[in-house]
Amino acid sequence: MKRITGSLVVVMTLVAGVAFTPITSRYSTAQQAAPIFVKKIPAGYRDWKVISVAHEAGDLNDIRAVLGNNIAIKAYRAGKLPFPEGAIVGRIAWSYVSSEENNKVFGRDQSFVAGAPTEFYLQFMVKDSKKYAATGGWGYSSFDKDGKPTDEAAMKTCFPCHQAVKDRDFVFTKYAP
Amino acid sequence: MKRITGSLVVVMTLVAGVAFTPITSRYSTAQQAAPIFVKKIPAGYRDWKVISVAHEAGDLNDIRAVLGNNIAIKAYRAGKLPFPEGAIVGRIAWSYVSSEENNKVFGRDQSFVAGAPTEFYLQFMVKDSKKYAATGGWGYSSFDKDGKPTDEAAMKTCFPCHQAVKDRDFVFTKYAP
Image (cartoon, rainbow over the protein chains, first blue to last red):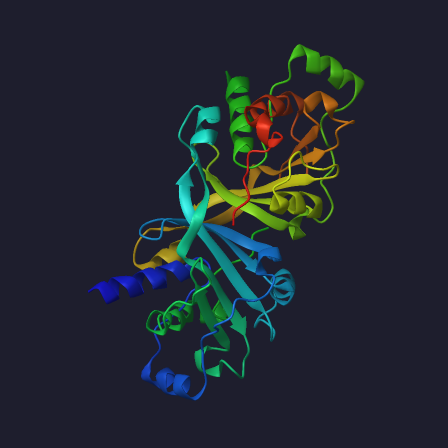
């Protein structure tokens, strides 16, 4: 039961930013042949440009920035699909925190800001059509605040969810104007 | 009454990202001598790095990214106050929209994303200690989705609110890790 809850949280974690999916038996075979998970945090991600922002309520209870490397941003702005090789979409998730300081100024409880990093702090999807052919051309990754990758069992929930947006090259987040 | 509500909305709009304040008579005099409002959208702001993100509930009902130009980001990361000359802190506010698509994947209503630009779409505070000496060394600006500046009467609500965080050089938003 715990495992199911854990997986659900991972699935939910990813939809608004970078999402993941359960792998079918076909993909499990592919996984043995070639890794579908990225284990390294892309360099310089904190400097990337903003694709959009989101708030996930419920168990996740986070507020997030979805960022892209230059290849991803260029493709987003051109409205071109599929994303080119080397595109990376990432998201940073912080705890969703009510700001007492801001609310005091407003005179009402209305301000929510980014707090500490969450359990699934950083997530990325990396486009490499050959390497990650088994999962729609994207390799998925997820890290906690210490840079430790999320365990692979949970990571298998990534790709199936993303299949819901196959027509957008498996990417949920739309570019905010 | 309408005017009061309007001003309140402007005040609230700015606190979580870039905030503004009513000008006292002393500042009104200064305003006549030197403009305290910036009327031009800083070039390339959409490419700036992320300082943090926030959600303003209530009348504003927006979700926002707070960005900084390189001078501002460098100061934030170094934890240095006051901000150096030329620093610009900006924020983009989008409508706070429930994502039916994401909720369908989650199986529950929990996902909120960025929608269309809001009435106070873009706001910036520009550091120029001499030019904007009358308002703490920052010039304030606000624009709607068409790039039209917010009227000056409403803009006068900027600086007074920011005085609440004078010890952080009048900047509300903290850098998210």
